[in-house]
Image (cartoon, rainbow, N blue to C red; front, top):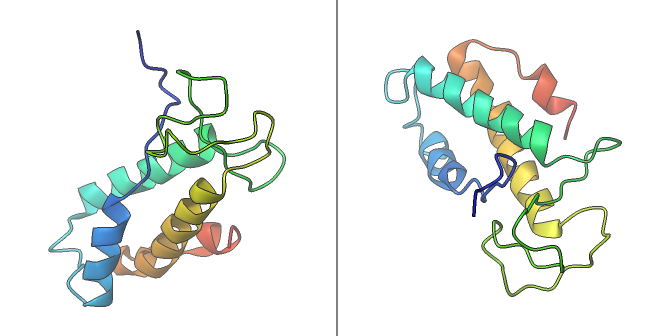
Length: 119
């Protein structure tokens, strides 16, 4: 069975990066700009594939199961309403990811305005 390119998993890497940021260990020399660019691309992918088109509501895209379970979220035994607007776990992940982006953008000399508007 082929995996759909929109199937995503929780961005748990952000937990470690945020820990390093809070300890002042995440710098442009310890986390090069090329990685920051990939992180921005990953963030954009979440915004493009998991966000509701009308609002900042996030819902796991999951091509494997249409009965409410979400295997990509890591909570495959967690029941979800079929037609819900969003998933609370992904909402939380995206809030955390966005907050990380806001607080880290200045490390790379970039504006955080595009992220602040989401919070």
